Image: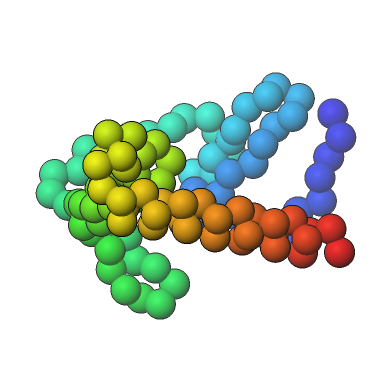
Length: 112
């Protein structure tokens, strides 16, 4: 087995992928091992971003639900509503046109 030169000490929780055994190892403070632990969260899970702002998991889930409801028409519009409401139909056509333009601009940027 080939050895790897370590240039700095790992931190607790650092992971290493062992290609020989196709496993993920986690550093526990003394050695890398394959034990994975779980925690039970009683209450709200809070994440802190790079700016030091706290985000509650419940709040993020509620925000995503609201976004998904508002964007529901985009990937799969209700054809009955589109037929019934001319303004909605026209707005949807404009949205699809803009989506195509933006996608084309992204492709042009990628190609050169």
